Amino acid sequence: MEEPELTAREAFTVAGLKYRGANEKGEISELWSAFGKRSERFASIAASGDAYGVSFNFDDETNAFDYVAGVEVRPDAEIPEDMHTVDVPEQTYAIFTCTLDELGETIDGIYQEWLPESQYARVASPEFEHYDPEFDASDANSTLELYLPVTETQPYG
Image (cartoon, rainbow, N blue to C red; front, side, top):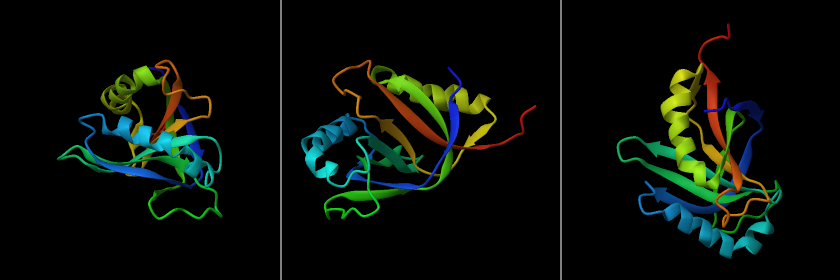
């Protein structure tokens, strides 16, 4: 697995459609389909043309988590009542780039290989997928970035 880029990112808020569960039947894909059908509503509050998939509130016993498919909102945006918001705090992230086709394999590699062998620990904070405006969900080779919140556990050297 390639070494990720490490970067600090300022806090931001994502508004969108929310799902809670273990994604056992591809519910997150369905959520993104619903998001696509409402893209005009999201464009009116978006800070950019980027989209985000934010995962948080993980339950290790049930494998359930909350997931919001949405956009970073402008500070002055009025969020519609039927949209959910999640605040992503300022944090240091390990950024992994992969294709849509490699997403599951990359997530497994992060948690089973990279994280246990690295000098970093996952922080109890939302993690997220970042999709730039060129991302094409119909193209399995389209790339995205995974942002894993981390802190250094041991000094370099």
